[in-house]
Figure 1 (spheres, rainbow, N blue to C red):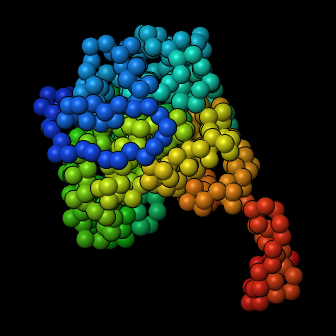
Figure 2 (tube, rainbow, N blue to C red; figure 1 turned 30 degrees about the vertical axis):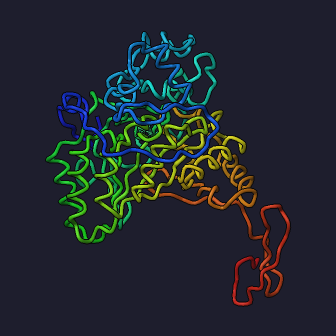
Figure 3 (spheres, protein in one colour; figure 1 turned 180 degrees about the horizontal axis):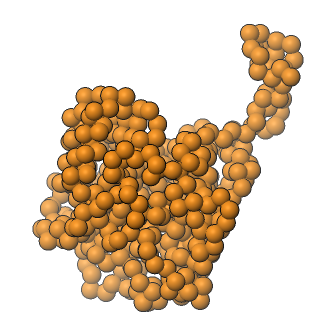
Length: 430
Ligand code: SF4
């Protein structure tokens, strides 16, 4: 395993958290934007969380006897993740290729799918986007030139375990290697789910925080993993409160897919705790419009109501979301649930990802088909995260045509040429 994470024996929020009585939320009512999907509301206080009809039917079929209250308990969702071929075979028509890939797989990035997220997966269509991103195929074992286990060079920028310091003024704190759902294109495939599922040792968290405290240039910390919202409130609050006590740290961000794959994780207890640590921002990882369900709308509504600005990160994936209709549908749906589409990432060249990677031309073409054709808020920044730790590079369609005297000649979204008076400029000169 990479030296970046040295992990604790006890899993985060699983063995310990499962023993704990579930606390009753103070209140959890939120208006849910109309998504045009049938829903029901459970009655019990703990379960007062929206359940879509599709998920409800899936629960009854595959988890008979499980009450809505249990289904809506994120710890139950963790305990009952789909981890094996046998479990999968009972839920979907597994193809020979998927079966062979599962049999061949070992090491990090195991299969892991929450029952909730499984309810969104098409049992009969192996080409469905969400299925392709969660169930392995043999293409994962293909290696192509330029691919790396650690394409972003994170391990080489780690001054202490669990911390990546790549940019002068910000750091990345990896607090766990656990995710409740493992994405087959994960940039940290080398780390997540490796050697069991573990949180960073407290001693290492303390060392990382001491490093930040001793580095005044660091003004921003992104807490990631694995998925930081898989930690229970106590552990997460420990990290947040220690970070918040550092005077030069201006703000903290959390990167998470939990609200998407396990939306019931966003409990009133969690949001009540998070709102004590503002300014706190959150980057949510969305892939496809099928993920924007009533449950996810409620989770995002709770986070937004707690005053947390929400941005999305989407990886551009071949055959999953690399067409303008899918992206537009996703970005419009995100705006309706108060999530600002922020980054569209060119897929990193991790080992075994060639079946997911589009050309960069394709990404630019998609951005040109969005920019000007929809609300600016619905157009994310398309970026390539430069291999080797070069950082994010914004990719923009060419808009400068040239110069005519004092006028800068520009091309607009529709391809028309426009003039901008720019007598002091040099841009566009041959
Ligand atoms: S949720 Fe994030 S860290 Fe976890 S497997 Fe998916 S991409 Fe990787």
